[in-house]
Every structure is written in C-alpha cells, then in structure tokens.
Image (cartoon, rainbow, N blue to C red; front, side, top):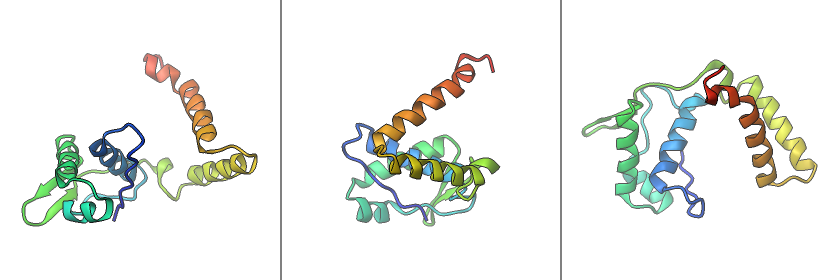
Length: 133
C-alpha cells in the first residue's frame, strides 16, 4: 500500500502531491491494476489533511482513468503507468541510487542533486519537448 508524504512547504497543492505520488507509484510498479488505495480516513489519520483533499485527488485520478471508485469497497487502480526500465527494482534505478550515493558522499545536498538531475533531464529531453525527437 502507498503511504503519502505531504510537504506543506513545497508550494504544491496537497491534492496534487497525492496525485503525483500515486502516479509515481504506478510508474515504478509499486501499484498495479486491482490494488486498493488507502481510504480517505486512513490518509487523514496518517497525514492530518482534510478528507475532502484526499477525495479531490482521487477524483482527479479517476478522471484521468487511473483509478476507479467502487462504492462501499474503496478506490482501486484501474491501469498502470509502469514501463520495464522504470520499475522500482530495475537496473537503471540501482545505477541512479549508486550515483546519488556518490553525489552525497561528494558533499552535495538534496537540492544540489535535484538541480543536476533537472539540468540533465532538460538537456536529454529538450528535443522531445520541442517535438523534434
């Protein structure tokens, strides 16, 4: 089951943080079709957020076709976003984990690593954004 982490200082709306975390879990293969999401009550107990915020996130995920609400049963994953190379146990993830450990050992903090990664992502996927790749 997914456990949500809410960063109240991020500037990102709480419901969007939930949406993003579910999508990340779907991409990494941590959630699969048929899996049940935590109930709004469980999320509220774990994160101290408003239940309407959880329901708003789940409605957005439903609108996108990723989950479906089953009255009286809960909210269930409808489809996955996982790709073989992006799984939580993939060799690429292991290489990235090794790289981030080396970056941390070199004295970089979380923001430094995020800046480097963002820079490389933008360079690598620039052509995709421009529609030329």
